[in-house]
Image 1 (spheres, rainbow, N blue to C red):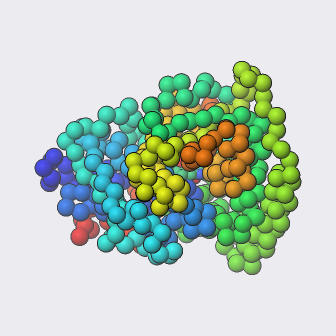
Image 2: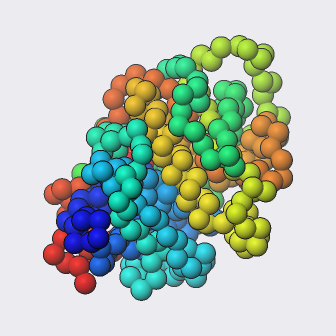
Length: 381
Ligand SMILES: Cc1cc2nc3c(=O)[nH]c(=O)nc-3n(C[C@H](O)[C@H](O)[C@H](O)COP(=O)(O)O)c2cc1C
């Protein structure tokens, strides 16, 4: 028991809910341990996208989403959390490229707090929110009644013709960078026969792949010879599409005031000049201290939960901020200053069909996973 009468069993329950947080490729890169009435969170090197996320942007946004979900669990119990980043958070580049989490170097320590976390969201929202990769219809501007953002963050809208162009350019970049594409393939689970189908990664169902396509593509993710051939073909096609896309200017923007006819496309933009420490910002690869990107991840998760509560769904498009060509086009279109960083791009709208659930290591019944290092009740040190 702790001084706030939060038991270790409560903390384990909070951790289980936080496990429903979204993460890039559903990597679930966090490894929480309940230790002496606190939760220590380490990063799992095997679950960091070494090729696709060299700046740790997606890792930090995902950790932020995890913290927000933990805080919502605490809030539902009439408690709050105090989140303390450790010096390891500023040393992500020192992580090994492979291997399990190192419990001796947690990046965050989360302590329960007696002051309840004030949130509009519930554990049920956390469980029911899903990424949606199907058709999204037009809805009212999400920003109208979205939760307030910290003053150094903003949600800017990008028009549909530009977004289509940038998504194509970003997708082509992913396909044509072999290490990035191989990493994506490593996280695909295209058949229930995949040994990790119920644990992590992106399933054929989540990606809404037609069953025949999933059947044809599944062996590509498992058999090295087929996998290599597929990456070569994808690389050639990606380079062709990228070359074509780069040679064309951004499409003409729609006339001001023209109503949306599809989903809204939003960009989470951070202002680097407003960060807490200029020295930290200079040291960080994104131009923002890691703790601040984590805060942005919390705000992003609140925005996505708000969309869910409003009956809307979100489709992230990180390829637009991953590809140097796409992000350059995005910056031009939005008129971003040098001091502004685009952290996340997503589409939001009214889903036509429900989205399938995604697996988690922490789901009840999920097979145990040695690489994750999650300490379950009764296993604490
Ligand atoms: C930082 C971040 C970046 C993401 N980028 C993408 C993306 O580019 N494309 C995509 O389809 N999903 C993206 N996702 C969604 C994840 O794939 C998704 O959260 C994960 O597979 C779990 O599924 P769920 O959100 O339905 O729970 C991203 C999620 C996060 C947190």
